[in-house]
Image (cartoon, rainbow, N blue to C red; front, top):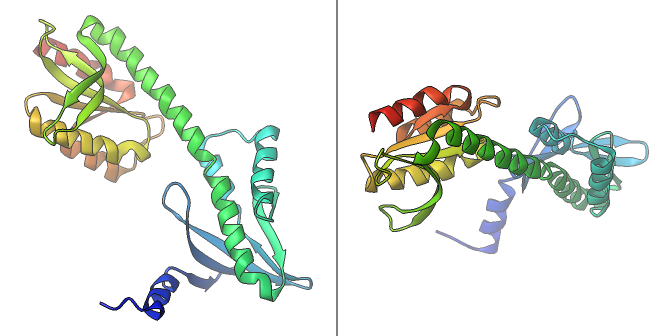
Length: 248
């Protein structure tokens, strides 16, 4: 293995890709949105020089998240983008430059677009908190005194988890099921790791993953959850919960 400056530079350059599209030349840069997608910028030429923009990709993440773009939010996004020397107009991050400024401008536009897209993370966080409370209310109604919230459980690895909800048997002495809310795809890997660890230590305790079926999870994430738990759509979780109570 060689780690000369030349080799390392070549490796870093391999993360950059350029291709011609109907919008202009699209360049993939080693900058990531919060969801792991790489940031692309589009470069075009006009009489005044070069124009670099993000094709509204950052704003699209906000739209997909369901976050409403109010005047206040739009003003905040414009301020974020301005810090990178760019403009935010009609949802698009844009900057103009000369040829000798092109490399730096592409970097600035990509980071500004990333800052815009990352605002969607707050929407995901708020929605996740709201869904967790929905699940908690459903369990209180269905399970009653047999549910415990945020119980500390030590798993096979020695790690202690604060399990969202614990359903007890009729004697209120032994756990029947571990229940976790899964609001979106972002939380799946964390829940899979937790359930796998708990499964090793408590093989006889059911593991229930109640997910928000108003915004369905990716199919592969449902498969992953299914390997370590019983995925339950929120809209029809009651029957399963009642069966758990009757069985114990």
